[in-house]
Length: 558
Image (cartoon, rainbow, N blue to C red):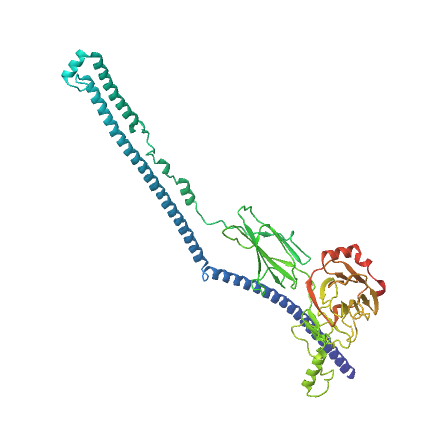
């Protein structure tokens, strides 16, 4: 009986164990399934959120277009412009009409004046000619009469009988005298000096018009052809040396294009440009070619959007499809929360402030209400960094202190190639630039430990230009530039310093970096300005490939 009871108990225990195992397995399967479902739901939610954002962006675009059509009255504007153009055309036609009518009136008046003058002259000549004709006829008739010349009949008869020769001579004398008078009159008569050809013609056909061709041109009036949207050629476009060369083409040949307008803006979003963007579009007008190079850019964001439109002399076409180009560059700011108290840090600028530490101590004493310096725990130097700053790689460490007048960048370098430049005040008594591990101690100076590498300029007492690492120094035989370029190739273990203007290699450390790096700077009684957002210059890459940088390295400092 007891054995049976034990068996039953054992069986029940096994059954319970199996049930427990089954329940555990079921629960585990349910949890696993739940996790899979949750992950799938998260992916669906992400996809839906992205699609919703895309749809919202498109809705915003449609609303803007509708606003342009209705509220902003773009159609009303084009109607007003059309009416203004036609009114201008009417005005031109009216002016031409008035001018041509005036030309006809002036021509008619001129011809009338000339013809009237010629008619008056001809009338006077005719009257003079008629008088001469009448005189000549009278003279001729008198010659045919016996009483010519008019003397008494008795005298004439007596002269004919007594002096026939004398009588004949007198008769001839009178005849020749009369003839001479008539001849002189004819010679001086206006009729023989007058041109019997009209000075002007009554033909007005030269003032006739035929506007058939112009009428056809007017009938062919239509809206201006709008240039097509250009197409940006991403394969030919280039991003290098903080310059962007953008190349585009027209889908159709258009000889009437006068110029192009290029717009660009910075963004941190990959993919098609968003309609709502904090950065405004920057505009470049008057581009005559189908490519343009933007120079001297600062790549302080990850991407740039571009779009282009073509313009003829009257109207601009639509923008091209916007494109997004990646603008890789090393961006960082200076970590003011861990800098030495004597350094006044403003974003990327640093200035030595001899009263910096004393001011902090005074503020600390005022805050504590005591006449002693605040303890390290209560020191304002240990305060929480500003939320506007990126978290420092030093992770809440104290400020640099003592003679370590150091400030670090706030962005870690754990791979790839990076480049930045720094311009320091030549009157600075001491200045250094390089990189350091984030474990660099608060009392440690750049170049004096194995955790930092730097170029150091000393203008105090004796001028020196040196490369420093692990408390080892190499004097550099090169002019000290006022602007230094720093190139860090993390994976290759190369840290090179350049004259930023000439790209001359000043020194190269060749080592193996075992920890992430931070840009590091030090200054005493001076100031400096850092420039970030720079790409590695092509000349620097070429020098590195040719091994020029390696040739100037000092293995004793690595």
